[in-house]
Length: 225
Image (cartoon, rainbow, N blue to C red; front, side, top):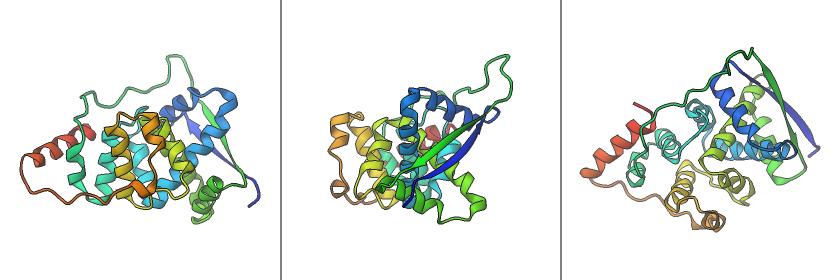
């Protein structure tokens, strides 16, 4: 596969774009190319698990995407509400206030994704070539922002998804991986040991009882209701 370059534009009058630009700015300039490529690859892995996720995750991204919110959106598309019962409650706080600094005018920033001749780039390329050229720009933006959001959940998560020989193929597998990271306190050593072969099947849906109230509570908190 020949090297390819794609560009996206992020705008300072869009809440999600502001959050994305702020996340990218935390990475030093020499490392941003690899960082954006890793984010795009992680987004492509998520897209292949369920094409709806990269459209939904950016909507919840306000500069920080907690494991609770990430698992909630995955439960939304997969219908596995019972999987939320094992997660701790998220502290109240609502969406972060993101806006341009006073006196700053409208800005549009261009970011370039450079794909290389490797497995990670092939994953991104296969997703982008699977849609029409008219939709490719929006899809690329969503893939990258999804990867950036995962970085704020845990810096190890996009790198893990991008480097796994066999990444999670379903939403359930992806959700279990995120829950394992959250349960272990997102410890780097534990994350590095996680492989697809260690991902267990989702547990059976529990009988109605006290856990049901906990699930509903987590959903309300996750979506800021």
